[in-house]
Image (tube, rainbow, N blue to C red):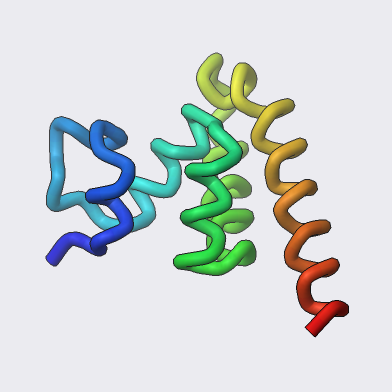
Length: 89
């Protein structure tokens, strides 16, 4: 059964809507948008998103190279936000 989060982010894996969450997360990482990656990090945890990014980085493709800078900037900002939120609670 598809995680409801993917209904909020249609089109990531249009060819296989029954794909595993990892496939969706990696697709989102290759098309980095802050709000989408934040939503995914809230749902699955920043550690999981970072793990999927590390797996993608093993592939030295143009897609990964193009996404590298924005993804790493976005993940850094999300981590800082999570840390700040945790210290305020």
